[in-house]
Image 1 (cartoon, rainbow, N blue to C red):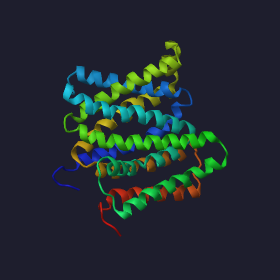
Image 2: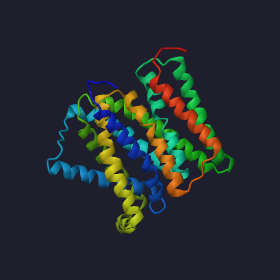
Image 3: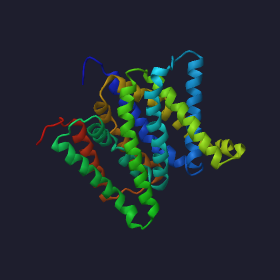
Image 4: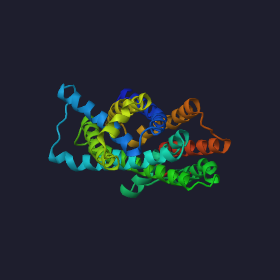
Length: 301
């Protein structure tokens, strides 16, 4: 760790990863009652209103100008819009455990995106780790694919779409930190998600009473509050803060906590099955992520 930045950015990254790990459980629970767009819309509405309240009380400072709009718009496009379109679809069609493990590939997507967009060179070890991680996803997906349901494959592909969106978010969030504060990045993300997903949600569920009345269900309400307050506002402020202080690859290392927490939550609270072959695939993915984020670029075996 770098002494110049202290421990706080690393603690923030670890805290956000843990909160994100439990988010798959709460998302899966909420989808038992709410529609996909409805869930994400209510989640970001809660988050955006909380951010607005904090701003109104002058507990946070937000100053958006034309110089900040373009980088912030790119961040919001990848996270939350594209990411949550893919992630929520994927969680709905797979399990919380599978989703958490597959989404842990985001550090690999960060490295791949950096190689393509930023022309950063990856070592032979890192390229092998990238392909090994993809093989790990195949192993995790096998039980669902053997069942013969095309929806499971769609879910896995959607989660891979979320992985790529998450990787691009990491890169563009780092760029945006040069002109905007972590609070400003989070503020724009929450409002972009609230506007986009509630518009889509109200189009698909045009009756406002039905749309908002679903929160009368206690499980749905608790899930929306967890996802809107903890997983959106607090976790993203922590993550954006860490990304502004340490490198994207360093922050990505702490994201390895997310799949561990998600598997624990899925097995413990939803009694999800996690087979030996899925365990092997998970280990391959985590090892691949570790190699990608720790091996020196351009260095071979």
